[in-house]
Length: 176
Image (cartoon, rainbow, N blue to C red; front, side, top):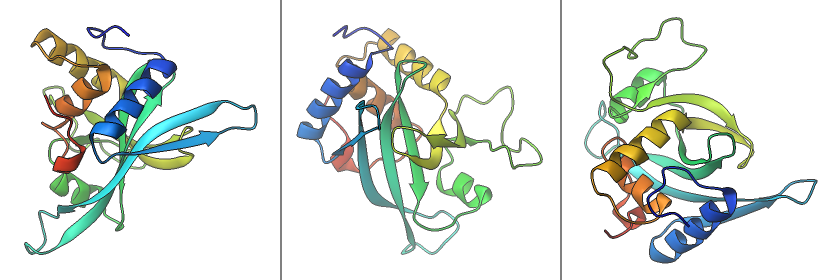
């Protein structure tokens, strides 16, 4: 396991996921396909406040950390329990830059944005649609964190790097 890398293989991802599950409240999920290949990912459900609603209004978020097999990086995915429009998602999660093929314009996406880009996509590992942070942004976040001195395995560095952009429940955050 290369503790300075921004990328990983599936077996390293699985090892790190097992370790993170033991240190936090992430649930480790497993699925096997028809060819016998085993897929693992981390999953958690918790509530976040909705910015445009009264203070007591919360929305349940199910967050995932999946392995991206083409880019060899962890990838954050999520969906809301309530049907939220893209504008409502943008208000609830202002640290992310939402883009979706069904949008007529790329509202909120511009050349100067430093927020991670997310789009609604199918995830083969978890077998469902979800909003996914683009793998290029994931790799860049991990690299930037490593350059700034972040220590730990790739999932610890990734989760801690995402905190600036995505609200995770405190019980899901690994210790430094």
